[in-house]
Length: 163
Image (tube, rainbow, N blue to C red; front, side):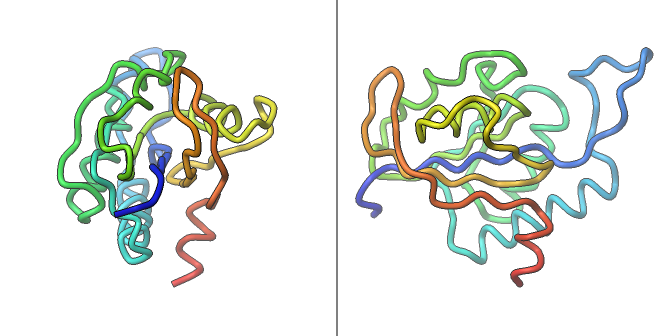
């Protein structure tokens, strides 16, 4: 068991382009986005970054990313969380009961990088999370606005190049 809780933030993979005929919430991962995301989550598993719980945005591209993560063995199951939809408040999700475990959140930009920046005490916009990129935070103090340390920030190219 980990000494303090950790938070793994995973941005959804490459998705279909925006279009007037396609609501943003319905944009799916492209075939390339699926392959690259699967390679990334497999690499996270190889790095032993398994998660006790995985919560995902209800937007199609995010839950597809979460499904790939579960299929690769990153987490035992996924749960939809409206708090991870773009523009929502994810902070209530940080009060998970397994205080010594690792929680994964799958969502969108700039919400995930702004959450990571706030947790480490950096200004909003100071971190950028690429599609299928990951951030690992060690949570040092909980509460309504937990704070912690940045353990990892890698884009998919960096994760896949480190194989």
